[in-house]
Each structure stands twice: as structure tokens, then as C-alpha cells.
Image (tube, rainbow, N blue to C red; front, side, top):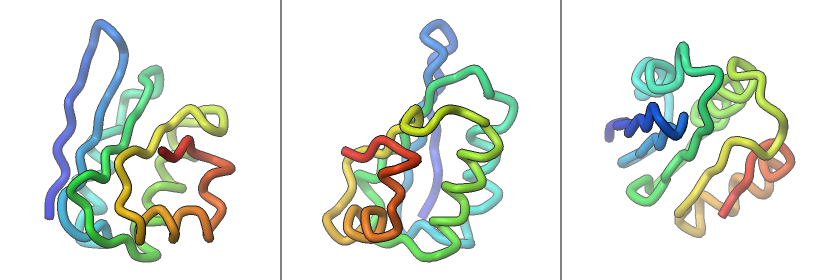
Length: 99
């Protein structure tokens, strides 16, 4: 369980890679991956994530609020079916682009 991020300064894009369960134990690491990057585009890659809890959902909402980007500008990709189902039930598709 960890967070890694790939920053492309020329393209102003950050890809955040989540591995393992996405929950409260990753709050600090996740926050550090997007702090001070308000003018970047973000992709959150859940390829290696196998679980998301309410703390994980809260972290996504806090990120959206902190970055103050328009709805749909932050992308969440490569979700396992169980994570995608939770995101859709929670109506996160209204705030994020989910693929």
C-alpha cells in the first residue's frame, strides 16, 4: 500500500499511482502528491488498488476541493470493478472522469 506520483512538468500533468487498499493510512502520502500543483492536470491510476473505503472517498473529495478544478478535470483510471462500483454508487462520476 503506497502512493507514487509521476510529474510531467512540461505537460503540467501528474499521474498518481495507488497500490493496495486506498484508505486512511495513505492520507499524508496522497495529499503530498497533489499539494502545490493547482495548475496541473491529474490522473489517479487505481490499477494496483484493490479496495477503497470512506476515508479514500473523502481524500478524493478533499483533493477536488483543494485543487478547485472544474468537475470532470481530474481523471480516475484503471479501476477494478469493485472500486468503480463504489465510485459510481457514490456519484463520483459527477466530479471526476472515471474510466
